[in-house]
Length: 351
Image 1 (tube, rainbow, N blue to C red):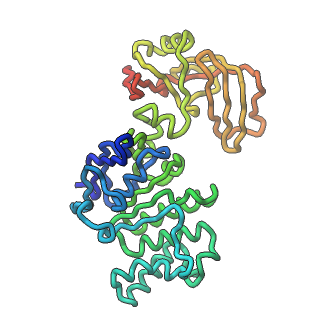
Image 2 (image 1 turned 90 degrees about the vertical axis):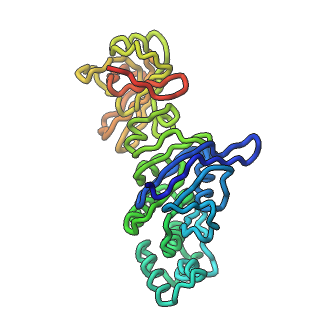
């Protein structure tokens, strides 16, 4: 039996707006589970329902076999980390972290031990007497994480905790959050709209859209094997191939013309700047319309008979640039083409 189970969760805010539409998920003990999707997809509504801030219109939520909808929010033993740090400016770091222990009547000696352990986990021991106003955004968010951990919750919820930080700090802190979560071995649900963040830290990802679930799977499954066109385009970049004679000729050459897909697509890094068909692919001729050098990779945009294609080139050399208008050959590997039906669902290609 799963540790956390949400079944058929529905949240109707108004007659015209249903934020959750029959959502069902499971989270295992010690798992880092991420809710990923665009703004308004229902991920924060689901998180708040688990925390007890908003009740569901219908559906069930159980944690370790207990019906959470029958338990008051303050009795659920759930830790919460918010987007806006939510630290108390008039309290020291130590007192901020200890705040949740007082109403739980934790003895003073144990309270100090648990706060010291939590501060050590987020590397704030040396700053325990400091006031939050004298600390960086990353340090303030660490306070929030320590405060959520110190109560030894049964479940840790995080609502876009890194969205207010700069890009470099986000990368550093997301790794720390993952390490801390594994260290304390607690089930965690993490909300984000950042695809790279979700791929980097999750055991499993639940991609949401319009109040329902598009796909649940490992980061490798979500990126490498998207089951809907929405997942493929939202998580990473996807080349959608334009219908026409050029596409039909390519599909015939690859023995794929009988699939009957509405949309064909391929990831940019799977395209090869080569006329070598040893990969079981089809060769196209293209004209360079844009070249963007990004250090560890470069993005090349081509005009081809099956539409504009973007190619990602790993480890481009300093002299690997391309001139606008330059003609190049590109191989489309057969095994990397993805087919989707008219409803945007992934299709089996056969063969």
